[in-house]
Each structure stands twice: as C-alpha cells, then as structure tokens.
Image (cartoon, each protein chain N blue to C red):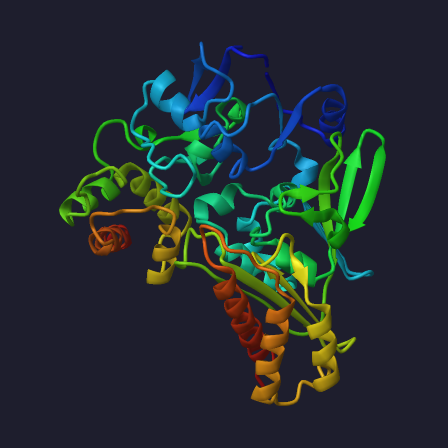
Length: 283
Length: 159
C-alpha cells in the first residue's frame, strides 16, 4: 500500500501509469466510507487534492462553454458566478449531503463513483455535458451519456482520470428537484433536472435514482416540444404539465431497494417533472 | 509513502509526527488514537453526523472522510485548537443556553458554529440552520443550539 499526493496533472497521470493497483481519491466522501467500513482494501492511493489544475473552472464567452475542473467542490457551485451560469447545478449542489460534504465532494468524484444517485449528474445530463479525460497516452472527450454506463460503472480506463466537464450555457429556465426522507444530509430517492432552452426551443430532462444510470427522457422531451412552444413561453396548460409528468415517469426504470420502492420512485419522479415544468413556465 | 511510513500533519498550528499508523486511517482516527486529541467524536464514520467536524484549509469538513496521510501539508484545526484553555464565547453560550445534553455532538457543533461566524458574522436564521444541517443532535431538538448561536451573534454585535 502507498499514498501519493501529486501536485500537477502530469505527475498524477504518470502515477496512474506506473502504479499497479491505483485508486483515485478526490474528496473522499465515498471512498473513505468504504475504507472505514472495510468494504475495500486500500492499495496505491493517488490523492488529487493538491492538483491545482483540477480545481479551476473557466467560462469561454466566445463559444458559450464553461469548463469545470473535476476537483471543483460542490460548495463552489452553490453561490457566485457558477451558480448564475448554471442555476440547476447550484440547486443540485445545495442538496448534496451537508456543508461539510459539499466542502469536500467534487463533480469529478461524483463522475468517478458514477452512482445513479449522484446529485450533480442529472444536471450534467440535462445540459449535454462533455467529460474530458486524460491519461499518459493522451486526452479524449466523451458525451456524458457515453461516459456513465451503469450503476457505478463508467468508461474510465484504469490509467485514466476525469480532468474536467464542459457544458454550454443556455438561455432560458433550468432547475433541479429531489425527493428524500429529509431536506439535509440525504441520498436522493428520486431526482430530476429540467433545462428549457428558449433559443433552440428544446426541453431536456434527466432523472436520477430511478434507473441503473441517469436517464434522459427523450420521448417526453419530444412530446413536450410538440405540445408547447418553449421559445414563446406562453402560459402552460396544467393538463400538459400533468401529461409530461406521466410520460417522464414512464421512461424511468426504478428498482426496489433499502431507500424506497420502485412504485414510489416512479410516481415521485413524475411529480418532480411536472413541478419543474410548471416552475419553468411561470409567467 | 509505503505501508507504515511516518508522516507529519499540521494540527492546531503544530507539526505533529504520525508514527506506527496504518496508511488507510482516517484523520478522525489519527487525531483521536495517534495524536491524543479526542475532542473530535466518531459516531457514524460516514460523514452523516458531523460530530467529527474539523477545519481543514479553511473549510469545515468531516475528519472521518479525510484520509489522514493525504492531509499532509494541510492546516487542520480541531476543537482543541479553538482555545488555549478558556472557554470560547460559543462554548460559553452553549452552556448558558443549555444547548448541551449528552454532549457527543457538541464539539462538532462548536467547530461548525465558529466556522460559520468567522465567515458570516451576522447570518440569517436560515443560514444558521443550513450551516448546521450536517451536525446531527438527537437530544436537544436544536432549539437551544440555535438560541446559543443567536446569543453569540448578539454578543459579538455589541462588542
């Protein structure tokens, strides 16, 4: 067993290449729970907290693209400029664990763990985010839907890490909603993020905790675009919001587990979708 | 670092050597069992209860979720480091308002309250509740804890 604390991305990538049984440590909020409860052995840990390249974000106004380093913590997305650029991400960030967890937990960690309950992930799916990866062999970028493949499964190679996430800013409303047993310090039972793009007239909705991975409801999105002019943002008929919720619910694929039942999750995620749409269409 | 290599942590302003420790130990465990600082409490060991809260590089975090050996170079402040002996105003207010019952959550709460008031001297009620939402207390029902925080805010405002 060994622990390494690289201070540059190149050093981190070299360690990933050289070490035989490498484990990446970001904020530790998932990793250390498993270590504390002896659920996995600790081998060669590469702690990323000193890699400053991963902790920065920037906004390229000419391409309307924001690139957020994998090591940016959730606390930084709750307020300030990032929250203004992506209100849905700010809302999701605010529901992550507690202030202590948000001060440590990172977007890259959420992606590395790839839990369908990761609070930030539905927002990334609804924003059509691109995940930027690097290894000693080079770099590549994947649409988020091709990165996250299943419960705790993703496209990361053993010698690869998530460097950053890139997303286009949008014009129009965006939001996030989550159901859990209490407001703070809770893992979601169901969650959803809705983005209404008034320039392209499109809607994008992604669901968390109701399937093996994050689910984009492309059929419900298409149906909504046919029923309602998103660019015009005229008053929304409640029947449309209700039907949208039902259609979103039908695209979910939840299971029964210790946190909830499939039946409840299917119902709850439809309610969230309806509510988000109504919030987004308030005059 | 290999299996049992000695490393040093900066805790409460002092560089402390950690010896004979397994490298997978959490910061909470190292503070309590290796460095003789038992003020931070361990209840859930999964970041849910906040009783192990410490300040690391300016952020309040759960020490149970920090791999101790990865915290080399960080500035760590524990409940023991908030004062050199006398009670802090937050500790005194907790006593005066009866905000301590079994006391197990208290160190984490005291650290979290100091951290909040250092960055936000006049927080709203909602800001206080949100800042303490990661510190679970099963005795008080929180009323007396919020009363203690209000008392400190008022006292500091009068100074």
